[in-house]
Image 1 (cartoon, helix red, strand yellow):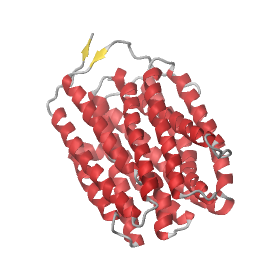
Image 2 (cartoon, rainbow, N blue to C red; image 1 turned 120 degrees about the vertical axis):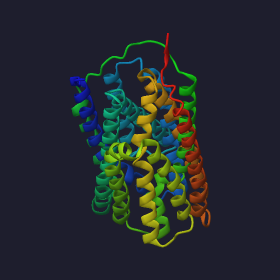
Image 3 (cartoon, rainbow, N blue to C red; image 1 turned 180 degrees about the vertical axis):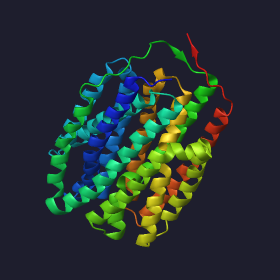
Image 4 (spheres, rainbow, N blue to C red; image 1 turned 30 degrees about the vertical axis):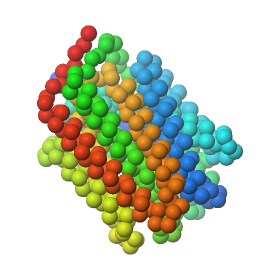
Length: 391
């Protein structure tokens, strides 16, 4: 079947948007926690502020995930994005409580719902093979912008000052509007969709998987820069290089993930990844030699995240297109609620002696749970009850 013109242009425009915004957000995200540390805030406070942002992503994405499916998608995407830019800039200037916490909440929320609209829009295009390709490309380029963000963030932060770099990149994010300003999304036919019993079970295990990974990852992933600083007193530039290498490996793996999955099987690739990752995380609880620790940290990051497009393609292909934004909103709520709770746990553990050992040990347990839920999804999908009932 010949590919429709909008099926070609929409993924390209959204990919360009992801690349531009991701480039500047990569620098912003890398520097922000270090910015708070430079101002004299403790690691516990950094964890608390991250929790506010995660709760914002969870709650606002949950609410707007239901609403956005009924709105003009272009106007909604642009509006949410501009609000994300505004609140991201404002929280560089005002640290008074409770405004700082509220603004961090709103920044997380509107950044999260922007990401949902982009990702689900790509997921609604083409057949399963093309969808897998586009999802892998979007996710992979997003990770690649993290590479440049970490490298340039470390450089600019080191030589030009963290606050100056943050102010500039937070404003330059508006350049991402250029490719999507006149984007036109196709309208989906409005009808009520009733999921089959198998689809409901897949959604349930999908959300449980998200919760387990969200909590496990939330204990340390967002604080990688702080962890390397606390454990090894590394410079900002060196930390940036380490995190950049991790994201570069993930970027390449994500872009090629649909080809790897095609050769060895999607579920085999996922199960392999989800079994290996808990072992790697558990080793981080006791390894304290810098090179070994860094190597394991980078491998864990790459192996876990490169399969995300494969996992999402399986789930999105199994569900009706009309429910993807809503399901993604619920999934984002679950993910970021778990990450918000774990950010508070990080804040508590990071102040303890051997606190990072506890953090990695607990995290590995939740990644084991994720592997279990993945196996349950595999069993449900093997039933091959894939048709929804429409009334």
